[in-house]
Each structure stands twice: as structure tokens, then as C-alpha cells.
Image (cartoon, rainbow, N blue to C red):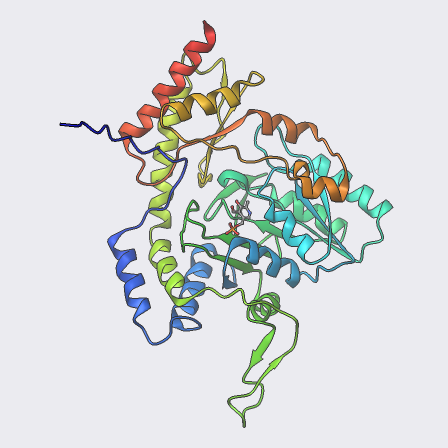
Length: 396
Ligand SMILES: Cc1ncc(COP(=O)(O)O)c(C=O)c1O
């Protein structure tokens, strides 16, 4: 008899959690009369607003299209600039380029990866001196689930007459205490817009999907129209079939099927974050001790962190890549979030060589360990054990 050894599947760094309720919601949506532009998208948008405390939300096809729509809602165009932290997913910057704006990269804190306020202020000053831009936007990214310093950023934005879009792809329901003030990600209290992504590795999964969250309904109206070709319907009460295209928009719509999955997933957002917190606490407990603490810096996971990612930092040069390969050899996937965006060939071609101290240091040291609702205790122990073996090996 031939024995086949089944390979153990890799432990992913993240993945979607799909329940029976999700399946029922999707199945119901597929057989409903409207599978796009129906009531489920409206219901999803309402639920997003209620949960995050913003006034309006526009569901759309991805986090990237949400960024394009939010920037367009700020009036960003070829004569605009957008300031983004260097550590983020490229689409935070790409969306600005899609509208023809110039991207200005700014440095980050080397431990948290969040936008560095001093670097932001310097960027604002130099942009004001050297660029003849008409309007601009700052895009703080609430990286890994930790809220960027939105209150301070609002102050700077007002001083330099900029708009603010929070890229909240990682941080639904996250909050922070900024100088004794409760600052909530996605609430749009400190920003014109916030954007969410519903990619499968995010807190809420729609397959693909995103949303623009807006400070008020007026601000939301342009992104809403642009998400559906720039078309306004029902512009003439005597001709119900009438519609007019007012702007040049896109088809960035979310389907009823995706929205139904989103509604079902959203109902588990809070419990998912609680589970992520428990898993993060397990990592914290295990990695605070021998042999980890001389080699690894742990993330600051205060109460308001919504733990999209659990990112550790390797304190010695080159150790991160070795750890990545070691974990992979043990069937564990980890990931680097992120390569500084200015390092991508597209941006090098646009803006030349850039190197920022905080971003480089963060990039060289960071590694996201597996974290997602449904990560089995045994699998998490395997990750911790593998990391421990790796570090023991390094000491020899
Ligand atoms: C910080 C950040 N911004 C934007 C995006 C883009 O979202 P999507 O993949 O839904 O287009 C992502 C997704 O990876 C992200 O992590």
C-alpha cells in the first residue's frame, strides 16, 4: 500500500471567517429580484454609520475605490497635493495619482509605523513654500488597528488649509486617548472622510468591497454620485425615467450579494475584535519573556487597538527576513506590512530616490504574525514555539 503523507496546510497570516449565517445571507441575496443597486446596499450603509458614528457612508467596490472617491470628494485633481505616510499599502497613494495629484511622502514613527507629526509639519511647510498647489489632503493611516493622531493632524490641517481623509482600512471601531480626548477612528469627527476596506483579510469581508464614511451628507453626495458614473437620478418629477450625468464618475458599486455578506459580517465586528484581542494578549504574554524579549519589540496594543495586525519588530538587522523564512519552513505564513511606498519602482520613476529614517527602520524590522478570528489555540502555540526555536538557534 502506498502511504501518502498529506502536507499540513500553511497557517495563514490572516483569512476571512465565514459562518453559516453569512452563507444564508449570500444565498438569499443571489435569488432576490435585485442583485445590485437594491435595498441591501442601503441597509449596509446605514449599519456602517450606526456602528462608527459618522453621518453618512457610501458602500463601494474596494478600499482603493473608496480612497479615490473620498479624494474626489475633497476636490483633489491635477493641481492638488496629497500627503501620505510612507508606511502603508500603495493604494493610499495610488488613489491620489489616479486623480492626477502629486504625492508627498512623510516619515513615520519607527516603532508604531504611524505618521510622524514632526515630519508631517515639515512636509506641510516645505509644500507650502515650494509647490503651487490649489488644494490638498492629508491621509493618516490608522495602521494595524491603532488610531493615528487624528486630533493633532486636524490642527495642522486647519493651520495649512488641508482636508483630511483617514485611511481606516485597518481600524474599524478603534479609538485612542489623545490628550484626554476620546478619538474614534471612522467617526469623521476629526476628518472630512474615512475609508474602509472589506477585503477578506480585513475585519469585515465582502469578498471585495469598501466604504467612504463622511462627516456629513453634503460631503458624501459627490462620492456617492461618482461611485455610479456621476449620474443623478429622478431629476425631473414628471419624467421618472430621467437621469443626468453631472460628473465623470466610475462604476464603483458594491453588489447586493457583497452587501448582504457585509451586513452579516458587520454584526460580528465587535466579537471579532474581542477574539483578536484575546489572541494578541496571548502573543503579548508569551513574547514578553525569555527568549523573546532581547530580540523582539512588541506592538503597543492599548484598549482602543482594533488589532487588524499583530506586528512584532526584530531588533537586530536582517533577523526579520531570517524569521520569515524559518516560520515558512514550519508551515507558518507571516507578512511584511509594509514596504515604504516610495521604494516601489512606479514612485521611484515619478519622484526619484527617497529614504526616510523612521520608515526604513520600521520596514526592516516589522513582521505580522498570524492573527484572525478562528485562529486555533494549537496553531497560535505552534507560531510561538517556532519563533522561540528560531531565536534559540540565533543565540547559538
Ligand atoms: C491601508 C490600506 N489602504 C487601502 C487598502 C486598499 O483596500 P482594497 O484592497 O480593498 O482595495 C488596503 C488594503 O489592503 C490597506 O491595507
